[in-house]
Image 1 (cartoon, helix red, strand yellow):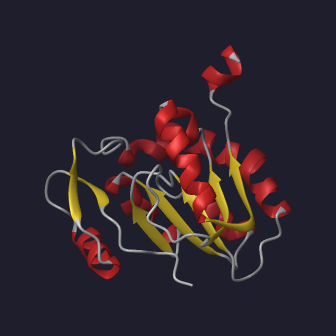
Image 2 (tube, one colour):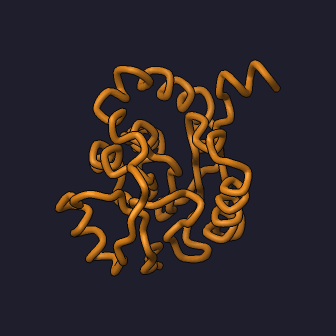
Length: 183
């Protein structure tokens, strides 16, 4: 089953990159505007500033849990908040057979993540452009869900539940320094 369905994407204002236009045409998506592209300025420096910490949290949290799920070779793994693809690259070394889909709302981040996933999807993670019961595993590393306001977190979790197949799993890293200090 193709996990993609036609869906309006959240596209940053300004000119679209050619690869974004191509992906949108292939998926039959409509263009809408977003006030500003989050993390656009951070994409180039992300690995230098946060890459080591992000990779560490993936290695000690997400990857061991994902390996325990023992996904079948034809499984679909969706990475929410894929960023520059750190999680996708690590998943490829630990779970090389499943199809990896990276979802992020920053075109600049996804441009750097393109080689880490079989598919990248430009979208907010609280409105997933995936078919019902199309994913075996949904992962969200490096505190992505911590930064969502409560209404968006609720929408995101409902979308994850809709997209997961029966027996599917959500694995999320909730280790932000603020969370650890305050809760």
